[in-house]
Picture 1: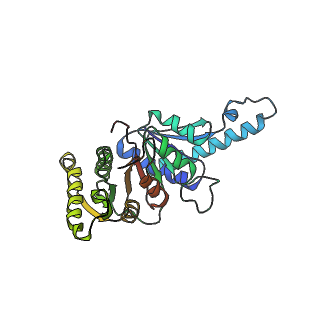
Picture 2: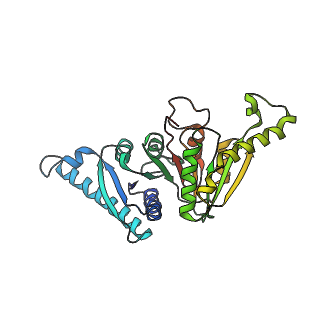
Picture 3: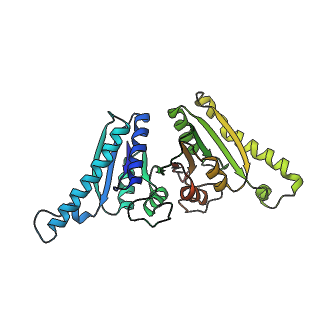
Length: 285
């Protein structure tokens, strides 16, 4: 089951549309949810706040209907259900995602600050949801038929690649696997310029070894391997412009213990112009 959160914003509707297309590709049902104050859900038809609670429930129903309608326009015939969630959006979505394969949200909801590229709800669920998360950002650029995945040589690569190859296969598009590296990281210190070639060859081997075996599992997916010098967040952001999806791990190489969302993941969520999938990296990975 795919879970998508809507709040009446344009970003929420874009998320519902994306989630519906994804559910149709995966042949799974879609659940459209909207968080609202618990007291409004639980207040009856009597009492001083009954009228306000009834208005809030009706507003929630309107938001949910809009999300369902958008989903069915994108994927007619899809199995879609809807439900209000009690509580604040972040904890409510995280709790509801316990049984979901994927949680989808818009990058920015109602009431967000102008100029803020990702809202607190999107950031919060990307960091704490128990399942993989896709943050959808509407773009006027037509997708170019490509999934981009960031590879960093960490133990998380297998989980990230599994998600990325599956997504490319579902869409019938190519996969661009990118490994970004910086010369001063070679050997754990500043490397002399004469070692650049050797360093780059080593980074290419790292990427090749990470990809090994996956093409045999997904022979229908054409893979483009790229080793690029530069900061991973900048490299991935530029490479993913116009792509169908950018896939990163929730934690990367050298991540701080206990840090639920790595710095690269945070950066691409803020700045990428395409939908971003944050693959949940298990602690035992």
